[in-house]
Length: 244
Image (cartoon, helix red, strand yellow):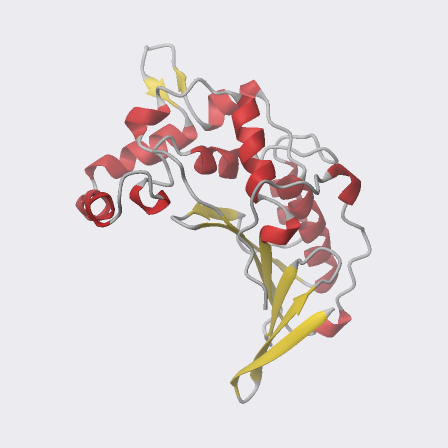
């Protein structure tokens, strides 16, 4: 395993590890707080304004191959004394997942479940209907993601930012698209789960992932539950990982 250490302050440093087996990168920052914070990031990009990446971000929280139960991740977070619920963001060139816990062993349990949800998720049509888009009994467009993006349609800062991106980058450039998806495009999507699965397998893999941990005694961390590598494809169409 390769590693480099960056001294940020007199008592604060970050050590970046890279596995020679999987190319997985983990950045560990020493922290005196009892709260252990983690962030898992993938380099991602959009190919249109439908928000496919945003859909995947929502659906990976639902269930996984090892834990096929909706809400299981949130339950684990609550049982492991997490001061915050899990959170995620689909940005213009990356997707981030944040979580935290109090204590080493609870954190490791959260990390295990999180990894399984991100690397081996299960997508279903029912999840798509509730999390992305559906038409309710009043004939109105609804869905968690649709409502989230619809609320941004009246935010002037967001609208101006979108216009600037369209003007700054040529048509077809990933930066010219809205990574979260436009409400007008989300309602047109047919919910093809195969397309979501293809996106997840293209970007959500170990070679394209960086894990950032902020904790007190990181040298004592030992992941006892192995990641189910046999369930994760090792054939990827594109690798956006930057080596160190």
